[in-house]
Image (tube, one colour):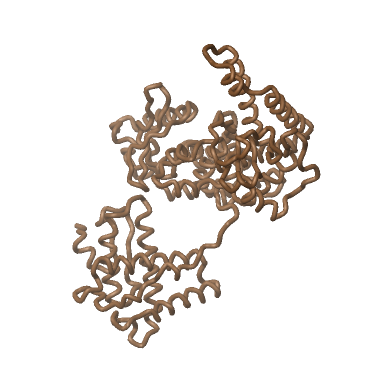
Length: 534
């Protein structure tokens, strides 16, 4: 008997009437009649526009922010009941109240920021909907009664904002998957494994259809899933044979348990309670609770240096960040990674993987000890760390050139496009290179040798043109000597130092500012599930 037209007149809405999962949206905490009515009209217009499974929670958060505004307005003599009597002073009173609550410890900084953002959104939409006109519930509301962008506090920056889990921690977690199966069953273990291996959101795995696995034209397995958050259904993700085997085993278990349900109505992971036809999927909140209980029951998770890793960071969504970081570490281009994560905006993808300035600086510091000039001589012998001024010089006093960096002033000024020596880097004192350019140097040497052989056998070419295009023996010798010196330096390192250099090389190469068209050396994906190829 629910009807949206009658439900929207109430102060507590049953969201089922608006096509949303069970739950309510209460407006009782907003005491001003005009503000409550404006909030209801905004919610009615906002409900069909939002997508995903978290719409109800987002709307409740916005209404809760309006309740904070209502608390402040109640301190006025008129109780905030007259919208035309309000102004900028009331907004400032709210901002000061939020700052006081944060300092008193009753409000967190993220909650304060989110409250301001919600109020900015709702108040601007109220005006855009015409609710401040003479016939609207907020008639006469002044234009300065709004939250501007400058009123919203900044969230504190984090040197390493990525939420990915270190490879060593992932190996420990995957080694404990049998314990997860013993505690919560094989279905929950399979869901967690798919979340880890595919990088999908938890609800995207929970709601998989029984026939979610298919093959492309080359016979490779493809996962078909629904992106509920963005409203894009039937998305396709290439997966490995190991993942395909996991899904095939789960399909068989589900079909054996529910043989009478039509396949087009069957879920891959059906809920085990109050679900006789297996048409209802596993609930996301229940999965979160089971995963949390399993993670908390594990023995201490230790990092490489022996320190304990906080278990609070082991969340279901952290596996998605880890998936993104693994592929970024392997050299997957950013546009491909955006497609893998199914993002429309690249700015969203960049929040999932990042190497912060601290890690970049550590990588550069390690490579300075293996920096060479054009003769193959070590430039830094005792360098442990660069000074701040040296890091600034690397940023503004050098430009990237093939196989290294250039400090020639005119070329730096032109952004690397005005070398006065026609880019003869192997014969220039302004040229520096390090171990991170070793793959590029090797590829360049191979190209020089191939070019020399091709020109030597070419017919119909004038001698002067052949001589001008022919790579010189001196350049070939110089590049070969440089490669050998770098390799010899790396061979002299201890296994631990070599591992640190390899890690630094991977970090620097991933975040190099330019592309020179040279072959890219992909970093191997770190193993997550023992015995399984990533």
